[in-house]
Length: 204
Image 1: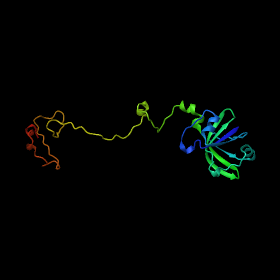
Image 2: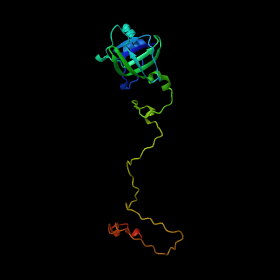
Image 3: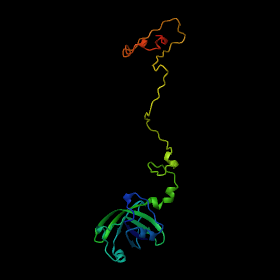
Image 4: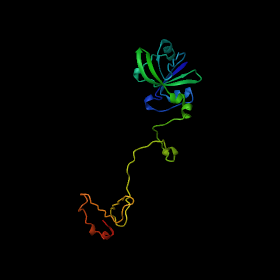
């Protein structure tokens, strides 16, 4: 396999999905690059792996000793066979082993490598941004319930604007029986009943 180290292309911590159509486009889109052939690239678990670059054979290909300490640390790596791109990786960490040799910690760019599968698979997006106000997803119901916050109140009143006392009586009670009611202490003497024009409409 051949590996292509890219500098200034796409840093993992930017959280940006970028994809080029060809190896030459990747080279053009980066600030600088190094390319090594005949590399035994180990995928390990297919998500996280590491690779050591800068051996004698690679130094002969690049014609100079690697010096990532001067700010030329790569941020992206492409694995290809000179024709087809096999996988894409973010360079998470670069550790110097000895002069001209570095160990790169890699994390696979799964969103690009498996873009078609991801875009055509059902998924639940917890957070997202919509810039088009006509997008139907703006009001997409996701089956969530939230606490309700009181926004207003409409009081149902009659023309008297007064409170009413409603009494419920036992079924079959004698109509001639006298029923008495005592106002709570907090309500006694608050407002004189006979001060209202409709006082004669109330029977206590």
